[in-house]
Structure formats: structure tokens, C-alpha cells
Image (tube, rainbow, N blue to C red; front, side, top):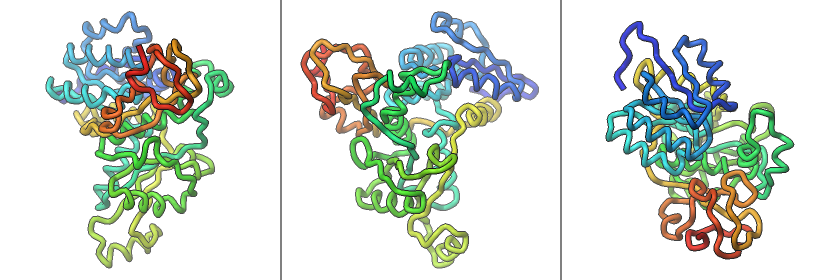
Length: 361
């Protein structure tokens, strides 16, 4: 995309009119951009007739996002998405296809993946090497049902989406997105999920990264308090651990090292996404991009499933998802969560068993 000429008014097409889409439309109104909202899949091809500068996809639906990505490629327009369910599996592919066509495919600030990537880059600019990235989580019940999730679902929210938060699938999906953006890996399938308070995060996550000898992503359920359970964080080490810098970090109340905690106690969804949109359309800047193919999320039986069961996908009653390395997923023929919906089992599958391609018709 070319940088807009002075006095031109950017035109943003928002795909999705749910919680994210409605909020973004209001938040972006302060920018005086031209905005078109698509709230029906049937009219998506109208994108080809519009002169838009950026397509922002926030449906949360994988197949819709694929359609939008193909239309953006056909039209030659940049695409920004907050759809981590789509991005964790298809993002690396579409990032390369968009690059070949001299347009951009990227994520945004506001949700955990984009906010963690931004924090990682900020920490790096200050002279620290990221050794671990973390997400705070209030609780996880990987066996929770859609019916149970409806107790916490508002009228404009999808109970399947809310259930994917509670059963940990969404957390694992977002972690996989981060791995593919900045070259990180899970320390184990599904992550450890350490129950440690905020004051122990630097030491616990730093030592885990040192033990596995890799930049890791994981989560904790041990950080409590107002705003804290939505927190994200990076654990870093000084690239130049001189006597002065180590001493000054202690003076600045950051601790003795060698691991330092950089904690952001919020992610504000569409409120922050406006910043990414502005950077893209006004300055042609985007840095939340897929650059690696490290991780994806596999489908695991949430309960004992019988032969003939048609699997209901992310946030449903049949499966929960866990992050794993792509090399492991491919070698063991695990089915990613992005591909599981609608498949029919050809055998019985016991609870907590990863579902492989030879288990489905």
C-alpha cells in the first residue's frame, strides 16, 4: 500500500459487526476516517467494488477470514486481523502470499498476541533480550461445556467463543500466534501454566526458559487483583549486563537480575487496535506479522467421543486445544483446531486423546 497523500481521507472496511466490530466502529469514529462495515458473509464480494485502504477482519470465524484474505489478495489491499483462530494456522501462509503481492497481512494491538509482540519489541529497543513471554489467566476448565459458558455470555457474544476462553483453547491459540510472530516456542504441549504470583514471574519464567534453552511462551493463573488477570508480560535479560547497568536496574526497582519482568496489566481490545490502524493507513507501518512457522494448536477430546460423532470445533463440547510445535504436529499427524470443525470420527476416542487424521472420515 502506498502512503496516503496529504489531505486524503482513509477508507477502512471492517468485516464483522459483533462485539469487536461494533466497538471498533465507535472507537475509530474519533479519527474521522471513512468506514464501511460488513455484517453479512453474503456481501463480502462487494469489497472488490470499494476503494478501501485497509480491510480490518474481526469476525472470529475461520472460513470467513479465509474468504476475506482471498478477496484482499484479488483486490490488492492490505488486511489486518484480530482473528487468532484463523491466524495461528493460516497466518504464516497468507503473510507470505501477501508479501509476494506487495501488500501487507498483519495483526494489531489490543488482544494478547499483538500486545505481547509490541511489548517484546519495546523491551528489545531498551537493550533487553526476551527469554520468555507470558499471559495471565484467571482460571481454566478444559472440560467446560457451551451450556456452562452461557452463564457468562452477553447478548452480543457467542457462547462458543466465551467457552473457548474458559477451556483454554483461545489462550493456546493466542500463544501460537505469538510464537509465529517472534520466533518463540512452548516449553511443552499445552504449556505448563505455572501458578506463581507476580513477584515470582521473572525468576520462574526465566529459569524455565534457561532449562529448555529456548525463548518460551507460557501462562500463569497466579496473578490476582484488579486488571491483573488480563495482564501480559515479557521476561528479559540485559544484552549488556555491565556492572553499571545491573546496579542501575536495581536502583530503578527492577530487582537484582539476571531476569527482569516487564508487565502490562491490561489489553484493551478495539481501543488499542485504533493505534495499529492509524500506523498502517497514515504511515504504512505494521510490525505484528507472521515471520515464522513454529507452533499451531491441536485438537484434543474434551470427553469420550463415539464413532460417528461430528466434531463441533473451537469452543464446543467435543474438543479443547493445546499448543504444540509444528514439527511435532506434522510428525504425529495431529489435526489443528482450525481444521477440526465438521469432521466425523471413524472410531471411538477417549477423553484427553489428541485427534489425528486417521481417526476421521
